Length: 143
Image (tube, rainbow, N blue to C red; front, side):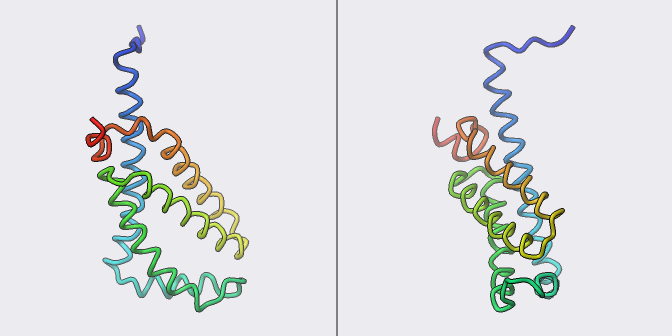
């Protein structure tokens, strides 16, 4: 017989589901930046400049954006992991996804654009359902 969902456990389940998704996105983003720094950000920047060559995005903008992206991913990821300043972190991360999507659309890299859309949907869901954010620094501060 299936476990019954009751009025007492459902709010906790929603909060737990929210926390797991927030944590997963945070670890993903933090890991992107951390690995780039650990391996030397120069290699990532060289790849990014080569990857974006031949697009309408000027080369002089790509390298600074790569530095910014590395730091932004680590900071937003860390904030989401602990659940502190969650709303501004989600807004910042979502807006950066818009910039990243613009870049890959200029390259006509539709597969990557689709992956970035999935990230954008995740940012949307976390921002939209933020009322369920309980297992976090922000959630504990509201108690």
